[in-house]
Amino acid sequence: MQRNTREVPGKRAVSVRAWLAIVLGSLWLLAGCSPSEEPPSASATAEPAPAAQVVDGVLSYPASDYHEQVPGKPGGTLRASVALDTGTFDVHSIAHGNVQWLGRILYDALVYQDEQGAISPWLAKSWDISADGTVYTFHLRDDVTFSDGTKFNAEAVRVNLEHMRDPATKSPLAAAYIAPYVQGRVVDEYTFEATLREPYSAFLDVLAQSWLSMISPKQILEDPKSIAEKPIGTGPFVLQSYTREQGASFARREDYNWAPPVTRHQGPAYLVGIELTFVPESMIRYSSLLAGQHDFTLDAPTQNAAAIRANPELVLHSRIRKGNPFRSVTFNTERFPFDDVRVRKALTQAIDREGLAWVIGFGEYQTKSDYLAINTRFYDPSFTDALKYDPQAAARLLDEAGWSERDADGIRIKDGQRFSVKLLMSENPAFPSSVAVAIQSDARKAGVEIELDVLPLVQTTERRYAGDYQLLGGGYWHSNTPDGLFMLYHSASIPTDKLLGQNVGRLRDETLDRLLSEARRSIDPERLQQLYSQAQQRLTELVPAAPSYESHHIVAHQAYVKGLIFDTSHNTPFFTSVWLDKERP
Image (tube, rainbow, N blue to C red):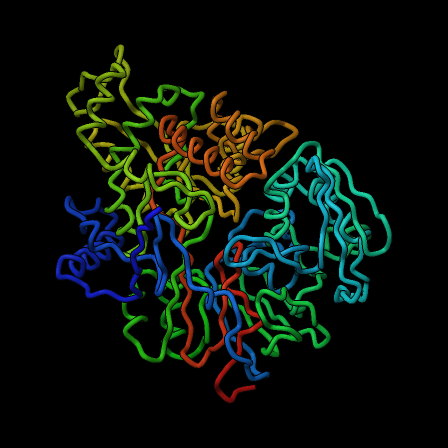
């Protein structure tokens, strides 16, 4: 088969139109107005990453992203900034995106993905799978310890898996990922047997994710609440201090010698320590990097990306995270008027993704109108334009759905009822009010009135899981496997009193359920591609949410920061091989 390949350049010339869009976008963010009528064209949108390639519509990054290239120089403390505090270091209990890189500082996982998505050893040096795919036998390393001196062994694995699925942990991710897990058995000290309810093709993939890292079994059993602020793991660094909303300090483990072989780095980390500061203000993160007060920022401001690229003393990396792309809105498919798929599709096609991406991404975000990230295994590019921005098509769909009349304000009416809905949201960097206002503006042009219901995160979370909303603002799902679609859209993932499920749109579709369930049970790559392709097509027909742009992780650092590689599961920084080419304590 002929392969359609194109290079993805790392830098591009900025057109006058693009420059104006950046300026106008900045003014709009300050003024709180709607975006300009004519955002930059698709050709002006930033490409995903330097040296990346799109082959047959699927994005991949070079192998050098994931392997240490040359040995580094030990010493020095990395001063880093990040926008938000996760509030806990118990990776089993939260769904925060920062866990993807933070977990790799403190913890290790059973297995690791290579850059092609194949599973490779980490704390488990090998494994066997039964013929029926329901029993996994892990053969563990015998030289690993937690930072409290506790041995890592089969009992540690058993305790961790139980902690993940314990209702008291209130796990929004880890528990869902291992839902097919029935029980574990300690065969001997370094052999662990996991039994599943049914075959689960993604089991090893999910075990490679940071949310399923190994925590000290002694801490889990004796003082689980202490994990939040005094975590104990097997990772390359140990938490020295933590002040909520201010920062955290990590020190190198001198005896660490079990990094995943795929990374090509063995032995302790090069850095003596990491000083992490929580800096919510994007301009302060940029200015402190520019002034040399920080060596690294894990949340590089998109509005400063062009300036960072142009600065020879700084380096910028933009990587698309695998899984589900950013959703501007999720529809409650059980609530009027979004129980009508025509209405869901209409609002999705009424949202100008290019304008939305520029409002928040300043040309750094790649727009999307399908349901898997472009670098996720089994992604099918056939549906790229299935839900493209098309105001005329949106208008026709609303007319067909019975919303053909308008009142004096231009708002559509059906059976005497105005098309006025509420958008539930919390203000956060991924979904600021500026994005909500842009959605509001686009919907208004289509004759739909959206009121913003802005609440604290705790209240928004409660209402999200209870299904107490019409429209839900923002959302993404980072996963190293397309099984994330099961988590988000299978009816078995609808939240209940006993399950913190992630199908908060409450979508129920027998066809989609069948495809995603069979994909879980299948181990044949060709069949998996067929099933996930059909599932992606079905989602563009059901439209449970409005995909808008890829979920990018953009970091920046001083040029003297060397050896940065990216975690294969999450495309986020992996600090074990980082070193400083500069004399500093």
